[in-house]
Image (tube, rainbow, N blue to C red; front, side, top):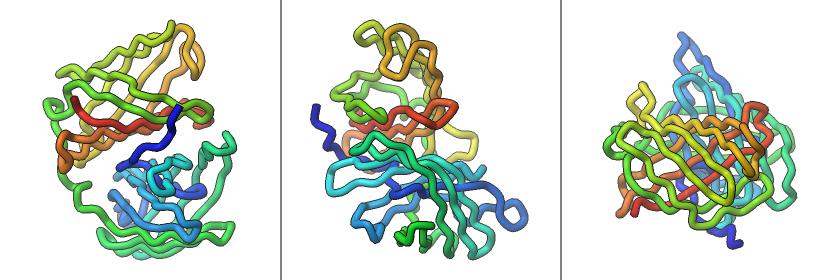
Length: 238
């Protein structure tokens, strides 16, 4: 199946991700960040107010990896650690980044293997979303660590709940706005039956609803409890 698709949320390279904290309990790295890596990848990463970070990397329109971890902005000091899921090799690695952050402007950091990132702040992060805006029908494509997913239909109800039935697997979950009032949606899901991630596996993560596109674009990353597999999806509202 075709794995080429554009991703507006998660794109970070070689294990970028992240912790909470910061001076006076304020994480100056919080936000939605986008920019190039020295590896040639285009990086997008969301760092939440609690220090969770979710992202991925693309080459052109091809999603090459997804990342989850923690990131800390303490004043102008930046540090991050986490796991990277590389789709070409179906492998999971870990890594760290250290560098500088200018709040709501730029992150520049170097990884433990020498690659660098130069990320600019996307002010769309500060635009909140409502349950009514999330609700609707979507067609999504994406990946697990080992499989491509094409044209999956997702209907999110007014209360954020959804159910997906596909080839003997029933997935139920919920997508709800975070209390922080940012452009980030909490996502949880559990699959039962013959599911590619296994029977009874629960996922948790985030989504970004981009209202600047017409129709709106939904980007999702959700991982299992061990952060060894999960889903990365993107698609448009129907």
